[in-house]
Amino acid sequence: MIPLVVGSVIIPQDGQVALEQRYVPVFGGSRVRLSDGSLEQYTRWRRLRTEITGRGWVPLGLDLLDYDDTVLIDCVAPRSTITTATSVTLPGVRRPDADVVAHARLGQQDWVRTDVSVSGETATIMAVTDALQYQVRWYPRLTCWLAPPDEGLDVPGADWDWRLVGEEA
Picture 1 (cartoon, rainbow, N blue to C red):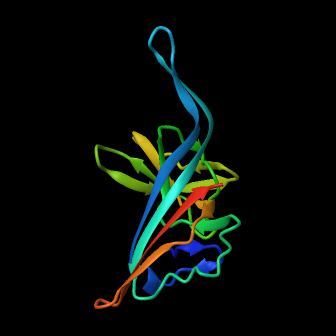
Picture 2: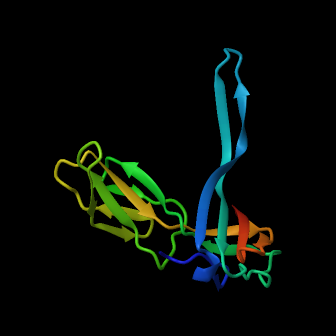
Picture 3: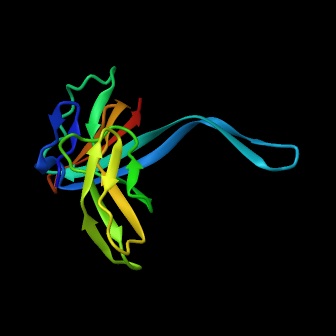
């Protein structure tokens, strides 16, 4: 398992015994009903919010982060895209310490790993005979605005739980 990294802090394994990361799309824009009743959407920008919760035997250890500036988060939950093409543009910035991986779907549920090479933002997938589609997975590195995490201690169980929310800058 790759570690969660927030700013320059590598969250210790004992601090992330149970870990969950969620991505929530956020966007700026509006939806407008036209005179014929159809709905139009005007989007100015799209970003991600990430919500990370964990439980462990030690506190999170992020008290010295500067929450008045953006912070890098090396995510632990992969993002993915499914395509029928063997070349795909990957959105955003990826963790430099985690590989991009690809799989080919051969049947209803038969996925096999295949080679993938990445140059810049483009992932080129090694074609697989009879593949119906391909999935490419990567681990994001998000530049976020953070609030200090919510933290709590279950004294009898000696377990720390915490929640960290970051919104992409």
